[in-house]
Length: 335
Image (cartoon, rainbow, N blue to C red; front, side, top):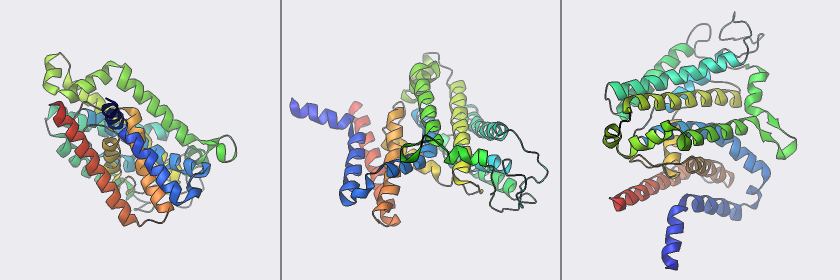
């Protein structure tokens, strides 16, 4: 009986055990890894990835996928950065643009992300295009649109810099003093995670999302408007990508049309490692958060101890395959 309980505990908490083992393993090899500054850096690097992964989780739980997330992040980073440069910057994207209230470009960028998500939702729900193909198509189109925007005169594909301090402060500022300060970007990520948790667990949309992912036909029979709900979910995901793009531009102090490249794969991988089922209907916000932190730890921690980036890719790939195999094994057992 004790063996069964232990097995059940390991199965239910595998993701958290992996996180602890990763931290302890790196700390044993390099004790200086266990510092407040290291934790702070990991949280900062995880913040935008968390928001992207939470957006992707909305789609994965419905048994869909979203390959356009990274390119939407890039588009919204460029949009927000292009309108938030200091007035005397020599290569302004819009030379004659007056200084706008900071909230205006941010809202425009988030709405652009929402529009991309809305288009994804319409293609999937109204045209019955499989999510993989629909979002693959929009991924390519969004990158094309972003590149055309980025190449406009007088910018002509030059990296966008000279961002206003009130904007970059969102990505680099903090509350408190010294090493125990809390970065604004981390606070924003926590607030977004809390809101998403409420949507997942306390709203009708969240319940419908799980029902659609669990069995779409049964959801239709039970009276759920699957098409409308999918449109809402894709739109929300797009808005989250838009917010992540804004924060990424603020964090790095600039933007190019290549921002966000491959971010969607990291987000999908983090979700899967965090327990979001590839077959739909299963996923939690805490699991997604831990999944993102695990992948950030792999990137940051293994670099910290001098492991080659190529070995890091191999390790990440093995973790993804193992997580999906474990997920499919649980799904087969339930059937």
